Length: 448
Image (cartoon, rainbow, N blue to C red; front, side, top):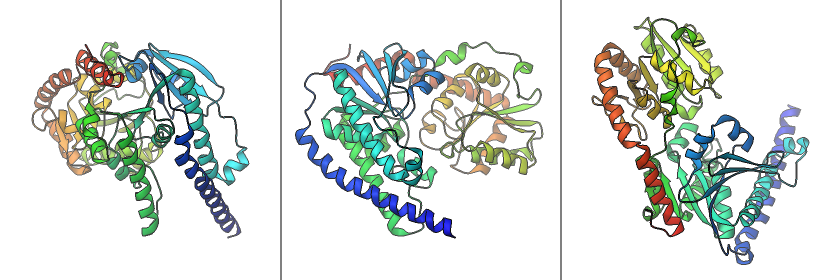
């Protein structure tokens, strides 16, 4: 009981100190734009803020992949910036992409962070904003980019407010759908059964989401659903553009290993394959429930899940509880060459919620079963190019899996038709031309 009351007291103190910091900082931020010098001249470079350390970004991606993800023709260079890692360094990440790791002047003692987590988080964010502004002045760039929705959105929003720089975002998700998935507002994740805290969280979320999109000079959506989500949350339609993502097609060039050379992959029987981050927003739990339903009538089918994340342990426990530990295999992280080979020996790709993973499955000529959510229906059309299940109905997804597995010839016909749509929709030359045209508007140019 003493520990509980002590913990509550610390939370109250932390909240009080954080409130004081915010009350002092907010008026300063509102007044600061009057005194902060605006950017005079600007080079044609983009500064892109990220929550991932530069070391991790370099380690987990290829230079070609980073060039596709961060390259912004006709801008000559993108500086990918992370604040808070150690040590400070600069590294070339790919053609036209440079990573910069910034170190904050203050490193909070662990005891302070444990005692005042909210206060130190807010103070760190304020210091990070100042660090980004200083770097932009040194680089001579006045275009700031951030992926949205993301934790970096409030930081980019305040940098723009203070400096008047041009702000652009790439919309990589539907913020309203993510709020539903998380069970809390995306930008203020207060979970409470009381009405007033929920109303407060909703107001803060709305203030950040709508305020951010309204301040953007360019909003780039990578599918129709995401773009419409941004517009409904405040983006100016005249500054909002649709541009498909650049898909890494090198996965198609990987040699196909033999089935027995794939560690952990089933050596016999039919396979339902899924690759994804194992987080709540990806609906892998619902996909597993669909397989559990399917497994009752399809004894020779194995569910193979490639990827890792916070839900992996609970998903494995659910498979064991259902008596399917030997048929629901969680392989963890595997490289793209492994995925390419695994797809060659699989019968269906299960994509509960995907972006590039959905396109990759289609390019690998796999019949696709997906939830009818977000952008999926743009490319997966029931009866024509694949199978869609009501969201988030696991039983209906199991029905669609049965339909795909019971009629393999028809499923393959739809897979071939879907490949034609994907090749056209994500044509690399068209994607590059659209990107050049869209980003040229930030430079006041007309793209060739």
